[in-house]
Image (cartoon, one colour):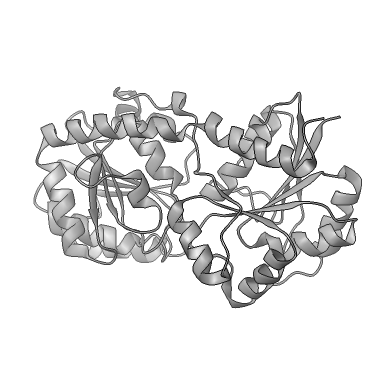
Length: 368
């Protein structure tokens, strides 16, 4: 008998936690596992629904409203009663909804993956609920060693296991010009790319300021911001005010990251905090050197001076210096990019899926 796993996420937008859930739903061995996915919110444009459809994985959308929505409890419980999962796997703040639904529908193992620093994951009320959940026997997974340390600091106990995020490495091959030319860039344009939500955590305003400070007088360099969020209008206004409106490109959420990244010259991330950003792993797999803030699990991915350059969070001048150094030294970019691609091989999708499969099998009492 197959082990049934129910992946529960807030949404199916293109973001890190959601990518992990979808990768597991699609990638777990069909001979041993049967999976379904629950999204509390309705479908997002450019979300992961097509990937689930292509893999014949059923996705449930529960129509969540902003804020606490008590309708989620019975809706989740009904799905659990119907699907009868051996494992319920939650991500980020959805544990507050999934655990009561699990208990009311007969109980059983719950695995919760912590994708961010524990103190940043769920807010004050959510943290209180998560603390109760840990005492109730929920098995927690941390996506990086730093996330695991933050978990101990907040909850006074370690997570069950650390499983780093993984990606399909075969999707990212260095080189090429087709995406660049097809999207209106000249062959001589040099591209700095950041794949991140435009929100306070990711600090896009700081990245724009650093870009302006480093390369305002070098018109061949352009900054591509891939993602969307609450700070988009403010970020667009900041670029305009700095005279960079034509050189900072807001590309929105895109499904073609695997084509875009290999044609860029370096990757930048200005986050104020992180868990274990998949976007950094993807950039490294594409052979890009990384300029990033040393937050969360980023230093576990990027070796300073080996695969990229790390700077303190919130230090715009330091980030500008890192961008300028990489931009003006193509030999250094190539050396760091080659090392980054080699380092990325440690974060393959098969390794991540295998680790979760072993955990699920142990909690479910072994493969059917």
